[in-house]
Image (cartoon, rainbow, N blue to C red; front, top):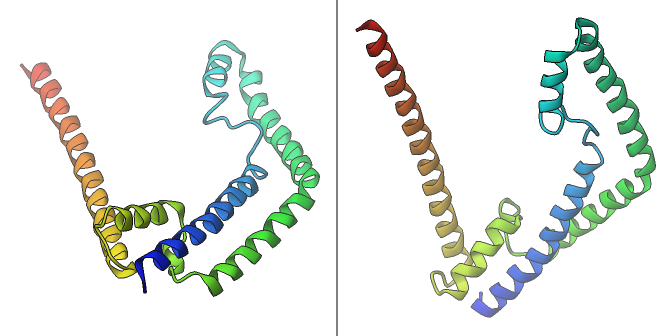
Length: 170
C-alpha cells in the first residue's frame, strides 16, 4: 500500500477511534460513584473516624453506600437516552472501521495510531507492518523498563530494612 494512502487511512482510523474513546469515557463517567472514599473524601473520612465517635464511624460508610446507590441510579436514569445514543454511535463507528480501516482492531487506540503516524512521517517505517513491529518493540521496551524500576524499588526497600535491622541489632 502507498505510504500516503496508509497515512490517510491511519488519520481516518484515528478520528473514529478517538471519537470512540471519548464516547467510552463519557459512558464510564455515568457509572462513577458520586463519592469515592479512596480519592476525594479519603482525608476527611480519616479525620472524621479519628475525631468522631464509634457510632459516626459506622454510620459514615452506610451513608455513603446509600447515597452512592441513590445518586448512581439517578445519574443512570437521567442519562439513559445519551447512554443508548453512545452505544449506537460506538457500534456504528466500529462497523465503519471494520469496513474502511486496514489497521487491525488490536491497534484501534489513539496511542498506537499516533505512533504509527510518527513512524511514517519521521521515515522510521514505510508500511503498516514496519509500524506495527516498531510499536510492539517500543511497547516491550517500556514494559521491561517498568519491571526494572519495580525491581529497583524493591531492592531499595530491602536495603532499608537491612540497614534498620543492622542498626537495631548493634
